[in-house]
Length: 201
Image (tube, rainbow, N blue to C red):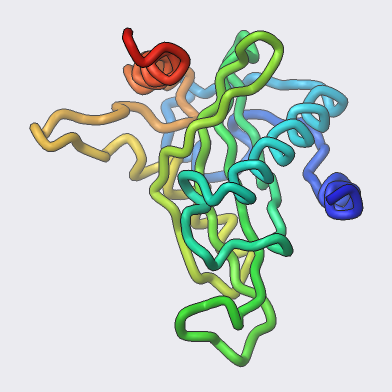
């Protein structure tokens, strides 16, 4: 897998990342609540590489987002962008996958590749980033650039409108809003992590 990691490192977005580095979030989040956190290129690249390695493990084990057999050894994974909390201990990761179209149930023979996108939340714990897939995923796009815009728009606009079965709002704020980092979802992730470490809790 070393050659694949080398390729992934080369194509990772290693420019300075901010939480408002795309139009959707700027337009839909009140100015006073914009998350303007900036991280160095070096740290961004380091996190990107760690995230890709962890996602490769999920891929190999067909875990959570990668449950489908459409994902296989040659599936390419790309970190589209990372959004950080002010203390850098919480992250939002936009992921894009690339597969050959013959892996689709109904192959689009006019294109060589198709792309899926998903969102992960990350928490730093003991020096590592623990990732949790949250969805919703966007699938079967043959236009990578268009998919990038779609995944960003989804989480910068309609994400805050997701509701629980009881009608309450699941997240309340979009990922470009500084208040997002205090949403209940982070506590839920922490509880799940603790239960996984100790099923008796």
